[in-house]
Image (tube, rainbow, N blue to C red; front, side, top):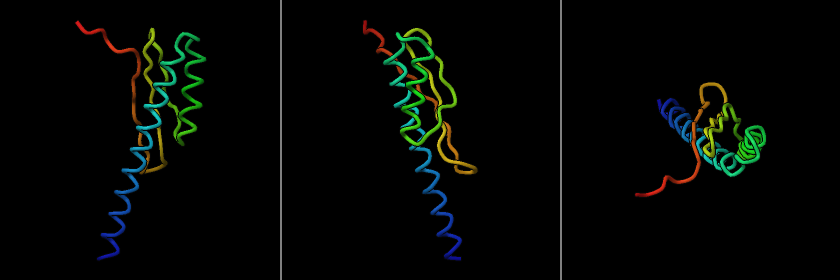
Length: 95
């Protein structure tokens, strides 16, 4: 019984780590793409892809609309895979 509980705890811990890695990779990739939007979509998404790979994630989606980037990144494999979406761009002006 103790082995089963230990296995479940390890599995949950792995799922949390994978989710956090995916979130970090998506956030940083979105920031990188937003920082390079003026170079065009291809260049901005290429930069986002390099940043995502450096974070041990895979970029699965990259869309640039104006100066706002919208990306998705995946981390992990099999039942422990997590995909996270992130957006980045300039702050909206305050009234």
